[in-house]
Image 1 (cartoon, helix red, strand yellow):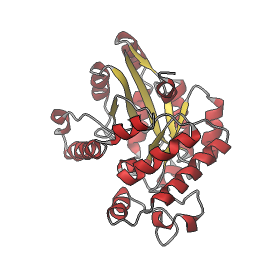
Image 2: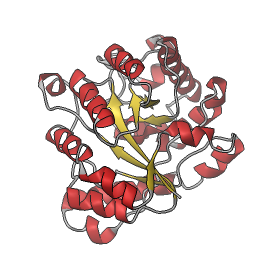
Image 3: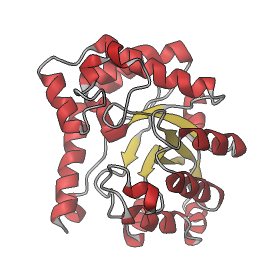
Length: 289
């Protein structure tokens, strides 16, 4: 059996991203989205999620962009002098490596973001993180130890099998493939920790190498060679509008290009012909019950 979760990151970042995710769910192949609890379009995203209950919703745990949900004076190790997150994953890594990142503060912010979503009336299917921050061992351990408090049963592991023959087609793809390979290496021991807490993850993950560089040929090839088990395809649909231009993100025009591909009428036909079933993380979290 081959199951595929198509998860749209950045739900709640802007209204244009929210609209694109809902379009990609109702008219395309997106089955799941991860919500940013501290971003400007959070409230709208919550209402859209409630209006579309077939969309699985997880938490896109954010430690790199915007302001914290927890009281700033309680999570100082996560913030800069302006009381905001550090801005880049590199700065977060540097703080972790110099042991200035406090586990108890990561847990406090994680709980604040989870509880904001729960109080808004949504049930979370899983957790991932903005900029894959939970590939940092300290962040991963803090999240994994806390998930059980909220009966969240699934977590993304960004372990992507890299096809180097494709990655060598451009310098950008090669750099992103190296990033994907590094993240896979950093996550190499996380499965054992997930097993210890009965937290589930997918068999395979895709999307880092091709971030911002989707093409129909690549997507069709990926679906053709999808392995057995449950896979996740990470995506970033959206509209490059005025609201997005006010947000710090490198993904702009590529969001509309991904949306167009996610809406392609050929994909459902191909999925059926290949025996691939679209599911959300809710199916993964319920596996074995």
